Amino acid sequence: MSSRQAINAAAHAPVWLDNARSRRYIAQALDALDSRDSIRQRAMAQSARHHRRRSSSSSFDAAFDATMLPEELADYYSSIEALAPENQRKNRYCDIVPFDRTRIPVPFLSGSSEGTGPSRYLNANFVRELAGGKYWIATQAALPFTAHALLSLLLHPVQVPGGSSAQVRTIVQLTLTTESGRVKAHPYFPDVVGETQQVSPETPRGTMPPIAITLLAQREISDADAIVSTLRISASGGPDHVFNHFLYTSWPDHGVPADGSSLVRFARLVDRANRDPRSIHPAFPPAPLPLLSNKDPNASPPSIVGCSAGVGRTGAFIAISSLLRAYKLLDEHPPPVTPGAPAFRPPVLSASPLGPMEPAFQADAVIAEVDALREQRSRMVQTHSQLVFIYNAISSAFQ
Image 1 (spheres, rainbow, N blue to C red):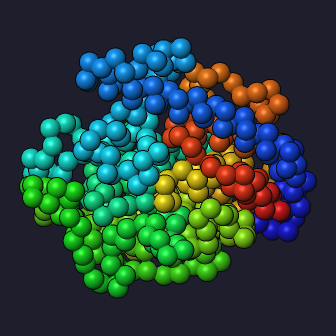
Image 2 (cartoon, rainbow, N blue to C red):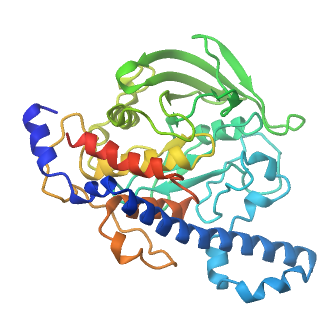
Image 3 (tube, helix red, strand yellow):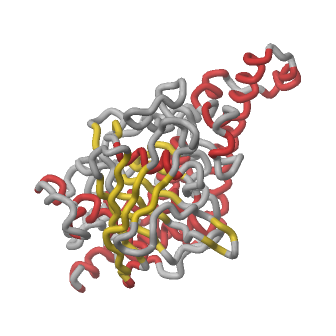
């Protein structure tokens, strides 16, 4: 962005960005968001209780009748798959599980006789940006026994809700492998260029083949605090698939990056590479012009994004990407900004069964974005500092 464009953008930044200056406003907004999310949590719990009662013919839940939510809410926010005995260990945190409604099914690999259902479980949801309109796959960081399912998502095209199918070619990781002495993400690819390692399925005694993953290239992009790895995967003699893995190195757990502008540069890097992966490595075919134009946010495949739990940092990153996209600030050369108005308006998301946000927050695009994300994956954007950081990162893009 030229200095003249920067002056124009700063002068026309939306007024809701000023809300971050008031600690009281942010506290009240987070309370309003959390109040709505507590209803979602109650609905999830109620759905689980009813499922157990139906399964066991127990009358244990009779005491809860006085505080029951409408049954349609329990069904809407159910997370029954996550609580199945065979799936519980696949959740990194027992209290952060995906809604059934938006959970993404993972296909079994060709030639496998595993499982009795149509798909495998992964703690991951389809999430669509409210303002920007693009779909993401939001997920927790890999565990030793979920890495195979995660990579399996890349070996088959995924069906975008209400849209076409496309093969994922971008993974965004917002947590380091180890933070404060604790493992936050299982490393599932080699750290030496040219080396290959095998990723075993969650049922090693079955017939599902392992996935071979090779590190083709790796480089650091310091101004975006990024380590970019280009990887090739294949399973059981099937076709190879190449994808890019973006690690953001400056987002501490339970904190926020010190520099919002570096995360904006990281978001731009991820968006550009997902539309044109050849800009990162020549192993990819040239991208068609419609992808490079960025006019349709879903012309390129959805990207997978995760942190440790897949809700706090993940939610903040998607919210930032969404608002940058809506105001055309993901482009390398943003167009002139219209005062206070986004440059792009995607189709409206389905209305929440909880009704609209409180009137005091309805004009705030950040609050609307966070609430919309929580409708699709529970607990997205967890802390006061993460909420404030969204405002600050967007503000830095307008400067």
